Length: 155
Image 1 (cartoon, rainbow, N blue to C red):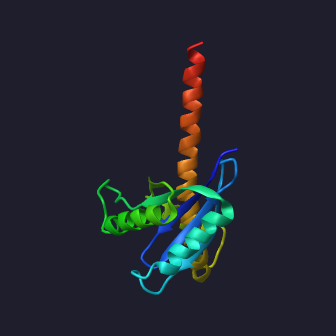
Image 2: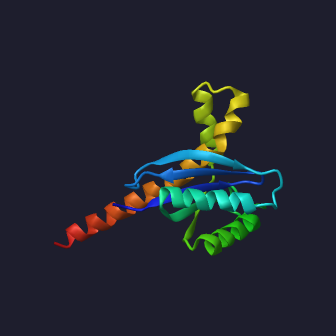
Image 3: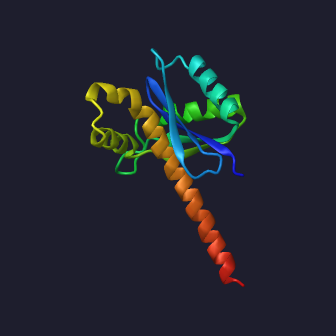
């Protein structure tokens, strides 16, 4: 059985959280952690650590805020500091994963699901975390399948 992975969409006032299923095939949005001050992260870290214990996660995937033109945006520095602090506090590997279009995709799904505009805030961040984590899981699955395919060609 594969290990569970926590996915995070780190923002200035919220952190969307998702978790993989035990087999590592799908990501499910869990919750959105909210804080009043961007620089006060103690409770945010504590909640993430509690979720890691609850789901017995062994890895973290963190959305990496690249711009559409592949440059690094203003949030990169804060995201990297958040990553380093998470690694220090949890002892787990934190993998950066391109988060471009995750919020847009989440917004589209919510609109197509006829979720009222004022209710979308409740779901958007945890859905974005699920999109980020699902992208990583799909990539991992594809990479494993490619490696198996290459191994079978050697026979």
